[in-house]
Length: 254
Image 1: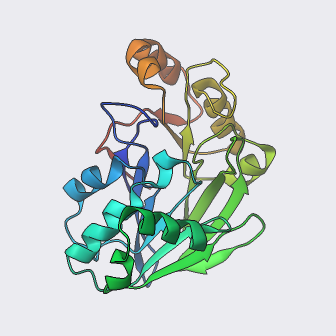
Image 2: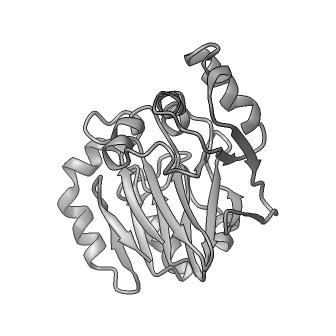
């Protein structure tokens, strides 16, 4: 799997795009290109990395807070403008097939009726295993005020776990076990913020899950800037796994 961090910011960061990860996965027969979450500041950053309107197979939406899915209207409208032809799969929790079309119609009334490509929907509720595009998808509820599904994607013996927003739960810990890469929301260094993770807890989570790598994203903007040196010292002290604080555009391969 190849992973590119399109954005790593929180909801209101004026410098960093909302957290969004582009995953390119390949099994023995297929390749799949997936975007994990798409907030309002994501499309412009995505287009800088990908100019081919057909080079995206699926989008995962972790939950329905604006900084995680309000970028969909712009992204999908530009796909239409650029003559996208292949179907697009949008995955997430129950009601995704209702909420996404409502959002598109609010942004651009009637435009969706002119799309030359199909939008298909797939729920991935906890307890289900969904096989599509050569990938295996599973989810679990994370600790966030708005129902958020963490997701695990497996392909050809490799696995990635993405938390969306929220503090980890026993269910997400079980889901993440043995992952090659955990990408976790970590709003502050070690302060508890209701409905959010922090860096210390996310490191403990990845350690307990037996993950090989941890990427910390969605860090509160002032915390990321004002405590950067302290955060890097905490990261450097971890020896059981590799811990990263990625910048936009950073790439990994697992």
